Length: 340
Image (cartoon, rainbow, N blue to C red; front, side, top):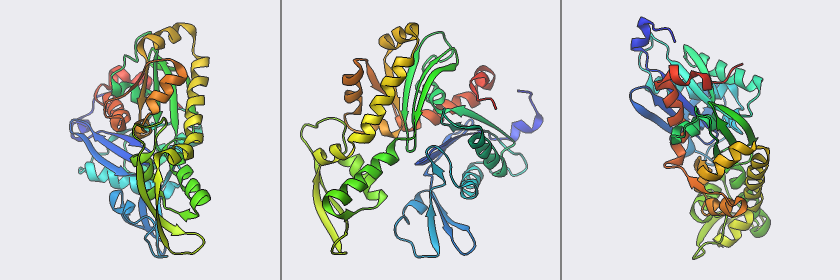
């Protein structure tokens, strides 16, 4: 990249623009933003009222003039206008020098379409970026874990985020084959909402579903099994209600999305060239993203594939740390950035 005098004053930025959470890394400073990808807007004039944690606290508790919006869906921008507001707010929070626009690298799902790429680039540019580059999430996750992605050997990453599960085999700085399914943490939450409605006539919110998933959700039997109290509204009586639920029930609720992840991993392994399959057999598969923290998921995948499965250290930040690595060593890693 050509050096310019202005770049001395530019705090270049890496963004993991996730469906559930957005993380922002500033070159030379580290991760400066770690907030939910949520914006509260006033309906009358579409002005933002709150962003991130503050907006999340409003979910399910607003009056008609306030709408809580998640501008990301399935890993890509669903609401251009609100996404731009959110990206601009996060960039301004970390980039104080208004005279110099930063270079920005944004993570996107490997299955992103050309039109989705264009929307993300436009949003980042409108939010104040000087140049915008995109990187596929599995490559970023692999770099964040410290895998030798530029070498001629097979590295397999399964990144389970909020909106997508990205499964990729990486060698020589590129993705050899990838499987991107739009089933991940959000679909797990929705499965719990539907289970509670169907089995207990209990209506719960997304925040409650996520809390249930994180507290007692699992992909394999637990020792001992866990219980917790779930609170919501009785759909028949219309009054508040609390019931005790067990990890056995929630495992049943999560069976469909978990099976979809298992099937996608098997499909990806079937597409992998034999030489790279041998590397994966020796080196194992790395799990990243918040969804990898579902209890017993690593054991389930190990049982299904007979391969070593390892959860990355701090899986929630792998993608942004890998993107930061590209930012810090741009000349070395610019070839991994997406074209088009």
